Amino acid sequence: MFIEPVKPTGHNLNNMAYFPEVSGPIPFEGRGSKNPLAFRHYDAHKVIGGKTMAEHLRFAVCYWHTFRGTGLDPFGAGTMMRAWDQAADPMQRARDTMDAAFEFMSKLGVNFWCFHDHDIAPEDSSFAQSTKNLQSMVEYASEKQADTGIQLLWGTANLFSHPRYQAGAATNPDPHGFAYAGAQVKRALEATQELGGLGYVFWGGREGYDTLLNTDLKREREQFARLLWMAIDHAKKIGFKGQFYIEPKPKEPTTHQYDSNAEACLNFLREFDLLNHLKLNLETNHATLAGHSMLHEMRVARHADVLGSVDANTGDELIGWDTDQFPTSLYLTTEIMIEVLKMGGFTSGGLNFDAKVRRQSHEPVDLFYAHIGGMDAFARGLEVAWAILEDGRLDDFVRTRYAEWESEFGRKIMESNKTLDDLEDHVLRHGEPERKSGRQEMLENLVNEFIL
Ligand code: XLS
Ligand code: NI
Ligand code: NI
Image (cartoon, rainbow, N blue to C red; front, side, top):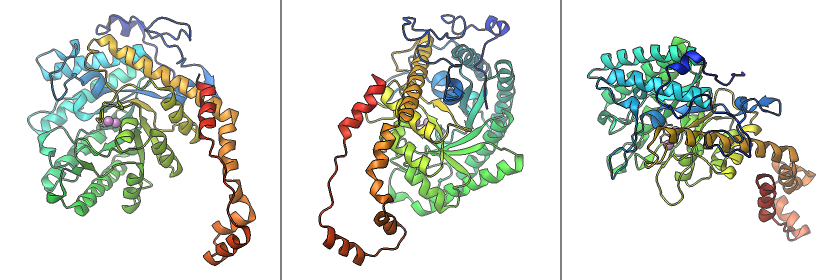
């Protein structure tokens, strides 16, 4: 599906007030540009391998960090200057925030956005009133989408911020807590459907435990699967055709989260027969917290055919938190794009900047610098990844490394025609296997050949 990069209309621009530093769409100026508010690599219309950069990359802006993030950290208050977050009435604040969001996304030139229910609509004194707020904001968002052509990549429910979820949402020891989570998922799913969302994400922020002393791990995992099945059934009922995703993360906020990494998620999906219904939404900083590279997580998911979407961010190697920084490393974006290209490109998914500006980057214009940098890093990563795959030497090396497995001897082992007795015979006849260099440094140089 090709989506034209958004061009704000004159009419829209007149109403655009929150980002006065940026008058129109961020231009592509190419490598030599010294303009910090221009792209150097991201040229939405540039064709690589038959698809435009916009089609390959499918950038999305995340509502929570970008428009609702305050800069609060465990040691200090919020720092962000946010003119859209000032009105006394929470619903007015929600509308102002949405005005700012669509102004920002139009000017940036992204085609997608992502949200949690309570990012866009304030939670109220009762569930019924919270639902009314959500419905009203969904109407507002749907006008904005129609105005700008921006689409919803995925929606989700915030099942982790409210104190009622302190002991978990789906994995709550109390079925009344489970019910609240279910009701919220129902409404968030309907909101996503209403907005034509291409997907729906489950990130288990509180679906884990702080201590096993008080936890029935077996039951909690079953409960979690049950909620997913209920969501799948509801999707069928309302005709929601979008893709469901589960987002792995090993810890934070809980000590141990059940969806700890791609392989744990795969085990969970297989165990509860959910593999045909959910794919993975992988996030770089979560891979880091799990002690894996993003490349590892991407590859595991791709091989199992569950690589769905990416939360594009990065962590800080010196801080052990989910710092959710904007991705700037070409090694990282190249690795991600190699896997995306190898799976044949995104279908329902995309690259969602689940990332926040640093606490000291408190001005609205910093949001532009952050996203422009992330988009440029991915555009360049795409070019490098494409060039590496076209060059073919990296893939050839790996193929050659395993070539003996294609020999008669190798094939017979794998086709179960050989026993341990046969292997012993073989060793007695052939002696030591030949050692071959893994050539790691040479291959690192090969990658650098394309990046430098
Ligand atoms: C938090 C998660 C969250 C999900 C959406 O660490 O990344 O932002 O992407 O609930
Ligand atoms: Ni995320
Ligand atoms: Ni995260």
